[in-house]
Amino acid sequence: MKAHSQDHDRWFKELITTFFEEFILAFFPKVYEHIDFSNSRFLSEEVYTDIIKGEKRRVDLLIETRLKDEDAIIIIHVEPQSYYEPEFSDRMFIYFSRLYEKYRCTIVPIAIFSYDKEKVESDRFKMKTPFLDILNFHFFTLQLRNLNWRDFLSYPNPVATALLCKMGYDKTERVQVKK
Image (tube, rainbow, N blue to C red; front, side, top):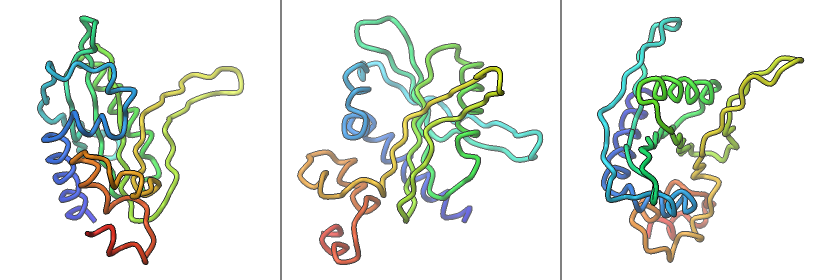
């Protein structure tokens, strides 16, 4: 699974690095409206060590950009995920908190789920007690298999076109999607 995951991550990283603006436009149009893409730059990969589990984790994509009409830097964190991970939302929160600790600016987290089977993933990490809601962390999700490929067929966007094969279709539509 590791080799497949590394290939998957590399492919998504290349696609989004090349077509970042088109990616945001296709799947997050409300975010797109507010981003000044002329000031976007990709940051180096962040590596974090999980001391308890004894493993290193890499934040896949970090893009520093600005909001339109504001003098505020934001960091967009994009995390492709090709396999189910029960603690994924926990990992997204840890990445978020470490990125915030380092950059001290707004962090916009996005998870891209590209499982081969349809699955509804959580878009949040919660922590609460009976007496206090301590934390309710949200992140954007793009669950490709839950999208209908036909909705993007005539959409003139290279990222949407490249991701058609990861979107929802049945066996009878497989040849059409590949064309």
